[in-house]
Each structure stands twice: as structure tokens, then as C-alpha cells.
Length: 462
Image (cartoon, rainbow, N blue to C red; front, top):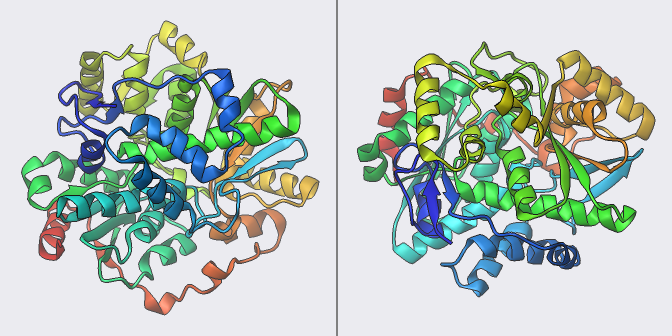
């Protein structure tokens, strides 16, 4: 399997090189040259496997340059850190299937990919005798998951930017109380989009990127998306075993389009997904894109689901590549227009085509609270606010004749204030959260200034 850029300036590179490159050198995002297709028989056979073996069978179809034994070892070590034997269990709550993606070390779905990516980076750096300085932006969960994926690993330093005061207290503590010498945290003035913009600009400076051996852990890195494809197959197998269904619908809370893009790839591989429901909060740029063809920047609203408080969905470019019939010229033109004007507008025929693949709804903070409350009253199950946005959209838009699977992207204890507002009490704290010590915080507050970030990286690079 070889990899190409959405913008056409990079092609024919190996999986290993794609992982190490992160953002493509032409500014685009990397994708496989082709998507493997599975038959219904293949999918049924995969459903009989445990999670690490399922992950190997999916991931290995995209990886031709790592020996099978080594890849299996990387996968098994990655999921040995999870606290549930099924890794990503699916539970039936009053007819809605909740795909629990929060059983990793930081209690968020990002662990599924970043435990794997951390081990993969370490493996490749040791093989090449190289070092890496990871830089990433986070709206909450990516930062801690990335840090836990690479903390104390050899030949890696990690620099994480988060928007000051705009992540939950638990998310902040999970990032900033890690004491390993290879971990550096920035609390930056501004929004997540400001953090992400600075990261992308730094990667766009190829001289700086190469000089300091920069690597990416955000979902711009293809390996992130690849690892997330697996749990769509796992969830389908679990629900099919209970219902003998022929199709399912997934509802995915998303801000950056990475998690739902993994589902999009799973569907293109042959997984029988009828509908992918894209759920947003008040930061509804993706809902406007799906429903009206309007992808235009507006102000970022601070909500109860802060990991989705995003306007610039970096993974949308990958979807546009397929929407534009794999024409990199059209992608380049679209991204240049967006860079210049801050908006893209799609015609009615294109909106209809998008609507054949995606449905979308936006849930307000009031709707989020109501959904948490009503779901708890009906089932005794506590949703985190991001998952609640997904449940809200799923209940609104899903067809009633097939199972609805809602992705639970974080443990409710990470967002205690929202849960308390909804059900009148705090969620139960897992031991890993209860043990966080605010006195151990290590974080540098900085302005939204690319020069400040680059200087700090240059002074602290490994």
C-alpha cells in the first residue's frame, strides 16, 4: 500500500513515511492510494475475532512495510493498557447502542489511536536511529491521550498547545500533571482553531519541520484515522451478534471530522452502514456544510462539550478529496479559496450527494443537558456531554428500522460540571481522575504567537 496527498504534490510513499511525515509536504493530508474492499463473508469472519486480532486484520491491509509479527506486537501492547477486555464494548441502553470508547488510560476515544501511534513512533524511530519532536493542538482530549501515548518513550519530545481556560478542568489536569521530562504543555490565548492554525503553519515551514524532526499526533496523521476504523467494525459485530441486523447507523459527535471520516472509510471498505450521522454543538460549521453546503467560518462558541468547540475541521479535506472524485486539483483550488475567503459554498447537486452519505444535526447546550437528564432517567446510564450531542442527533435523525450506535467519546467524569447540571450530582470518579494532583501542574502560558512556540521548540527539542 502506498500513500498520496489530497493536493497531489506527494505520491507513492510508504506507510512508514506517511506516519513520519504527518501533514503532507505539499500542505495536504495523506490517504491510501486505494481503499481495500471486504466482502460480507470477510466482515462476518472479522466479527469473530477479539479486538487486537481484528485491529491487526484491518490495519495490516493498509500497512505493507512492517513485518506482521512486529505489527501484531505493536497492536497488542497498545490495547493492553485498556481496562475492559473488549477494548471498545457496545452496550444496549433502552434500544440505543452506546459504543464505549473511553476505556483507555485517559478515558477518551483518542486513546484508541494514540496508544497505537505512540508505540508506532517509538518503533520507527528506533529502526531509523532518529529522534522526533511531536507538536500538536488539542481542544481537550487529544492532548492528554497523545501525552500518555508517548510519555517516557525514547527519542521523543512532545509539545501540546491547548486554548487557555477552554478545556475542562479534568482535561487540563490530565495534560499538565504528567511529570515526564519529554512532555511540554502550552496554555495559549485564543481558541482551539488558533492553536491548530499555529501547528499547521509550523508544519508548513519545511525547513523548520525538517531541522527539528517534527511529527504530528493530531488526526492529520493518517495512522490516527486508521486505528479508529477498527472500532466501527467491532461495534457492528457486537450489535449484529445481538440483533442479526443487516445494517446499522452510527451517530458521531465530531468537531474535526476525524472520527466520522474513519466511519466513512469503514463504509467504503464494505461495512454495511446505512447512515453516518454527524453531530455538532453550537459550533455547527460541519452541520451547515452537510445540510446547506455552507462551510464558512463564524465565531467559536464555548459550550458544555469543549472538545467540539471548533470551526476549522482539518479532516474535512480528506472527505473533499472523495467528494471531488479523487481530483487533487479541485482540492487545491477549494483549499486556496477557503484560505483566502474563509468559506466554501457547494451547489445543490453536491449538497444532495453529501446528504446521500451523511446526515447532521446541531445540539445546543440546553439540548445537551436535557439529553443527559432524560437518558439517565430512562436508563440509569450517564452520558458525557459530547456523547449526549451524538445521542440527541441520533434520536432526531436515525431510521427506526435498524440499530442506532452512538459513539461515547469520553467518560462522563471528565465533564463533571455538565453532568451535575443535568442530573443533580457528580459522576463517579474513576481512580485515575481522583488521583490527579493540581499542585503538580507544569504548563507555560503563552500568547497566540507562532514565533514564541517555534522558539520554545528550538530550545527544548530532543
